[in-house]
Length: 255
Ligand code: GLN
Image (cartoon, rainbow, N blue to C red; front, side):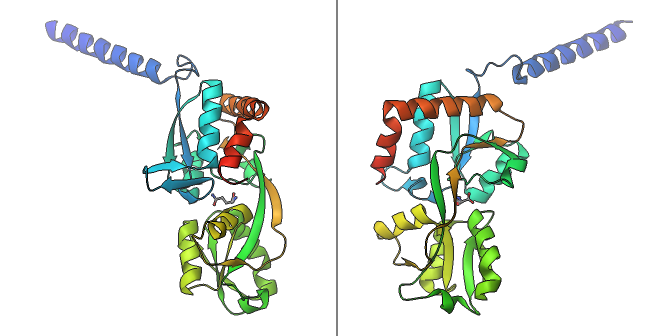
């Protein structure tokens, strides 16, 4: 009898501990104000997010916009600068609540992500050593970044120009491949390569005409998840546009 009682007590204890733990994790009892959102981003995509080697901190338009919007809306968050493809995977698997990574809003991505209002517009260009022409791509390899619209753009024109594609995880790896001659060219968002050229980080030139597929960048969550976070992001974006903070952030990075 004693044994049975002891067992029952143990079961009751385990059950109450489990219930407590369950409560702590439940989104019903955790208000938005208490929640710390996990936000992923790219790590070598200046001027949107890149490592400031002086302070060893990630800086950039996205980092500053997120901080300003979070302050305006009282959002608590933790930033993880892990790369673009890793960010997409983290949001899709639920490991991250959201991503802000110079991410282009596309209809295809809208099937798996919910986006904020657009906060910047950009399109893709082809980049190579100065003097290279689009005709020089024939029979060569062109670098593109995994999971990006730049990669999609490269796929869409590869037959017309007769090149094949090598994929890289980071924009920095891509630029290096072109600089060393491993690939004849790469595809990149216009503002990003423009910034790298302007700052002297790369000695490359834009060889295509106008940026292709110009679209907005958006903050993204997994489709159907964290709707309150998208609402807050949009409200904060409006607010920092009205206050002049948005313009101030862009001006800081040369826009
Ligand atoms: N804007 C591009 C895309 O969304 C590239 C983003 C990035 O490399 N961080 O695919």
